[in-house]
Length: 345
Ligand code: FA5
Image (cartoon, rainbow, N blue to C red; front, side, top):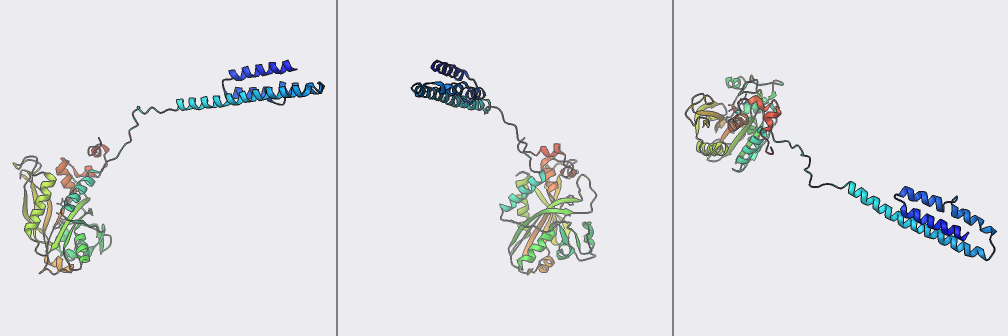
């Protein structure tokens, strides 16, 4: 019996030593230490032994069982460790592999030009003001010296929602609203970017929906020369120090005197070409000194306060700056067009 136990011990330890995975090791444990295993079988025969032999055999059987079980335990730890190491090795990340590029979108060219214009005016101490796109006839026209039936309303064909409410045709109503909020006290120094709507037929330079940026300064002693100086700074910063500006007399019911500002044509350097229609100049905005009626309607004393205002179309400015030949490119979402303004590619 003793020999049989020693044999079983040697056999089991050899198998444990050779076991190559946890499954095999578990099979060895069941085979040698389980209830139906050979060691249990040997122990069952102990009843036939004499009283002196029994404790000796019992101690030996326990020793054999303990040695096999501790061998299994240490092999188990070893195999487990090896399995972890193998898993780690198979899952390791090669940090030298180039990553998958993340597609980054870019700002729309109009957003870029508007932000550029905003930054420029914020740098000159202007605040940003906003107003509703669905506007009252009062702010869009009446408060701007354009009473009902005034022929100059035809300059801006409108989308009416009711008799009194329309889609604003320009950003000038924000002027009227802002002045009203100031309750007759200057200074006011704002720009108002936003969408506007007109019943214009779409073509290369006209859209039924487009953006405008309005500027307004009201204070004591504001003069035409302040307007000219401001517009000159804007034009040179936007288009280059070598650009000239000129102010031409014009008409807007809400400004007196009114002007339109042209900048010298970048393409021909002022000599005349097809873009500037042979004149050497390109019109970019309307402006003027705020009409006394507009100041008074908003609650300002027109004897004490004066002001200037201007309104520009950022699409036309972006077209000039980036050499874009058709305003419709801004609104048709052609990815090939938009991608050209990516800062990442
Ligand atoms: C106005 O809308 C005046 N409110 C501007 C103004 C403000 C004058 C303050 C005086 C004082 P006008 O209709 O000219 O003016 O439009 C201003 C600019 O909007 C134009 O110079 C042009 O750049 C742009 N614009 C006008 N109509 C369209 C259109 N259909 N599509 C795209 N841009 C347009």
